[in-house]
Structure formats: structure tokens, C-alpha cells
Image 1 (cartoon, rainbow, N blue to C red):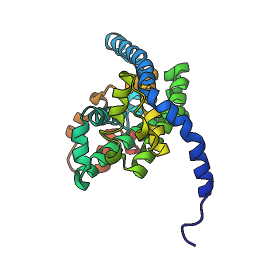
Image 2: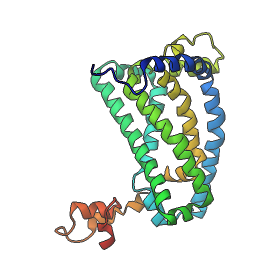
Image 3: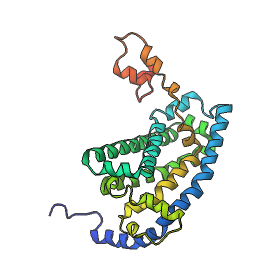
Image 4: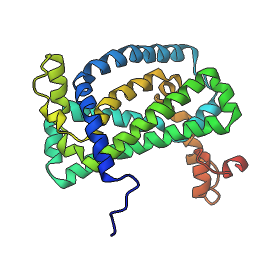
Length: 268
């Protein structure tokens, strides 16, 4: 019958859930401590890098930097950070928005939009690194570490987050009752009220564990730390605005001048 065929039998999925759940239930209450221990030193490392680049300039030339920024990764990352801060710091507001379909859909669409921006930006970095020897040469040996962090930590974390959001609708289930209370319980050393955590779906628990650790890895990567700082000047918006006769400046040429994926930029 339709819908019965599965690549993995439901019984197997249930067995995996029963096997993994006790481990996740043990780890989740300690996530706030892990997040702080990992996040703070790496954030200080990122601040040091930004200070050095502000005084010495970027370690990338403009052409390489422009290729890696052809998808504005900074928009996606800062958008995700902002949305998660709002969700955690303003649980009452998020709970009210999640109570009705329209505001809840707005929160979900905006957050998922930032997640897709981040995902495409990271994929663009990996593709440019793999396909262009000049990019590999500019990034040097540390570039391989950057790509490993993106491929094994950041992209899988985004996948887990998107899957959890799409399947669990955690804007309405999780906000204001789980994450905020988890942090309060952790830093008041209250581990007696974790029943709500044990009742959460597996992918929700995975997201709570992976998300803060992946956020810390953003600041471990020298390249991602650099790309988080927006550089609008590399888009050459002025060239698009003032570049040539209006009859000649088609949509394709405008996109090419902004360094979209197009061969027209070479003939401009």
C-alpha cells in the first residue's frame, strides 16, 4: 500500500530512538556548561582576529574575498544568531507569536531563510575551495581546517536544525518552556526538573546539543570568522547603479556586475 514502503523500517527507527534517547537525556542538561566552556575562548580568539585584521588588513585579496562572498554568508549567520537570541531572551514574545498561525509562520520562514542563506554561503566556500587552485593557495594550510569544520560540523548542524524545525514545529513546542528553563536549571544547579527534556523528540535534543557547539566552531574557523564581517564594498553596488547606458545594463549584466554566477562579468 502507498506510504508503507520505507528505506528504514519503522521498527528499526524506534529501536534507534530507544537506544539513543538515554544518552541524549544525560547530555542535554549539561549543554549550557559545554556551550559556555567552548564558546567563550573561541569568541575571544575571533575578537583577536578581527582586531588584527582591522590593523593589518585582510589575509585575502579582494578577488578571492569576492568569490567567497558571492553568497552573503554574513547575512545568514548574523540572522540565525539574532533569531536564536530573540527566541531565548524573549520567550514570552515568542510564545505569543507561536500561538497563532500567521506570526508563527513568520518566525519559521525568517529563521529558515537565514538557515538556507548560511547553508548556501558555506557550500559556496567549499565549492570555491575544491574547484579553484587559486583559492586554495590563498587560504593556505589553514584553509583545509576551515573546510573540514564547515563540512563536518557546520553543514551537518544546519541539516539537523532544518530537519528539526520542519518536522517538529518547535517554534510552538520548544519556545519559552524548554530552552530558557534548561539554562536556568543548569546555572542554578537544579537537575530535578528535566521531565520536559525527556519528552522531546530525538532531533530536538540533537539540535539543542549541536547548535551551541556548532556556533562555537564558527569562531574556530579563521575563514568563517572573516566572512562574518560584511564588506559591501566588494559587491560594487555603485558600478551596478551607475555602470553604463540604461539600454545596455540588462538584468543579467547587473547580476554579473554584482558577481553572481555568470560569464557576462568577464566581458563587461
